[in-house]
Image 1 (cartoon, rainbow, N blue to C red):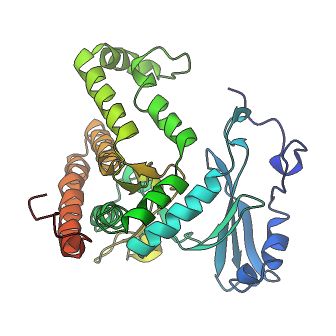
Image 2: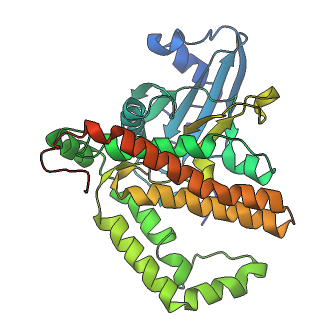
Length: 342
């Protein structure tokens, strides 16, 4: 895989305008719905954050602290370049799915201000006062309330975007409009298949080679992953997030500078471009897997407190999921046949 060889903003092979840090303010100023969100004549920060695998992301804030994020899809994977082509329509999918999730789980995803179909560009809420949860866990920070928020989020999506909470014809139309075969294929390959076969592009740290080989040789494990892959590909329950690891959760604590405080932390699920009508368990499972990875890190570093706290995130997420789903259950659209024993 090669790194991008040219600046996307000046790449003549891309058939639409690609923003840069220099052109982003002009773009915002030209859009009345965005220009009212911040003062483009008094900007304090314009930055292309450059940490995304797939997309360009710009953060603009003015001197009064008001901000907006612009996220633009390229016709290829940003991290790799043209050698890995991708349809830029994934930006539409993310905007649509995030808006739907915002309706059923308000306050748990970023607000979408607009979507520009000509540029495959989303304007959304600035979460610069939040940080990525994965990094905070790696630092040993313990933000209470985040696991519970994510449990409520997944439950709200599971109920509200399934036939339990949506008109069945509307739900089927939404499932069709969010069909996401290209990005699902990435998950099917990179999560469910290639770690267990010689795919030619696996990269394993030298220290992990023995463990990786043992995992690939574990026939029971491979069979279980095959079943999980089948469920991922065939069980369309709700419009799931599709990539809900701790790197897709932004967190702000109640303490100084967003540090953990006495109250529950703010939490938002971001980057839903992998979403589709799929199995709810995948979102829950992705979170749980990341909790276990964080717990193992604590154990490896001799931090038993962090290890136990991360392990406890599993039941805390599930308890919040169950409580929220049960709370919504009386609102199901067809109680005639969907009884409590369902």
